[in-house]
Length: 312
Image (cartoon, rainbow, N blue to C red; front, side, top):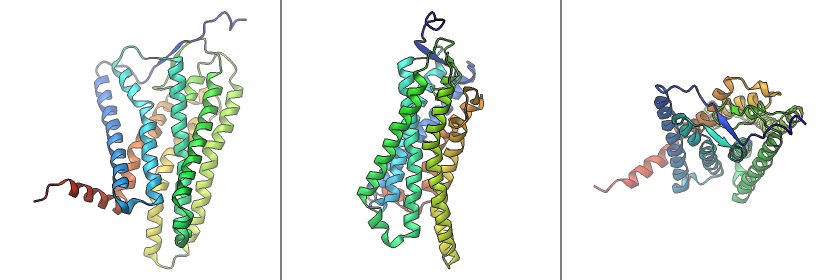
């Protein structure tokens, strides 16, 4: 009866970062530059992969999908954050909060699943090189990406549905810069024990299961590499996996801490910093890591620049 006498929250206030008229323009410029770099670098990587036929392989196909997900992933949160940094009103309607939460989880879960698929691709390339083109055919690659997308749809729906089915009666101030599940659950005027259980089960399926697959795959890759007689061959094989392992580590660790910690109080003030890391930093570093460590991408870039020059 007490809940019925209270009004339901129609909008949330995103607290974001400390509001300071002096530092806000600097903060706005910093995040705007990062966001533009994310869009430009990932778009450039997709263009290079599309234009250069030497990059028309399963590995680069998955990298191009990863770049597209990174742009979508950051676009769900960063533009709104930029507006709120310079705005006195930081409100977001209940419906927009639900949409943002779902899209963020959809793209994030799909990307996490894609990491496991990319590890399988590296396993086939290193452990079964002669059958690589047969096993990783275009249709198989598309099917794998489709499975990742379905994984994202279901995973995002589970997190969002059980979070937004709760009763929110106030306060309505979210201590975050976007509607992330753990931060929103802190405002629920109801028992969230069921949500903790659902989040643990869903988090196990969308985080632990793909991560376990990655670990198992790389253990097999490691043993295969150690059988290579040539030291140069082992170094070359390891280098093809180093980029992927680096990216997965940057994304998996903060995600696991955020979504596998039970209880709404598990997200402290450091939660915003961790979210910045796997929402913005990884999207910025992904194309850098995959391009700086890759001669094929460098050659494709030089080729693209050469095409753009006027003949002398």
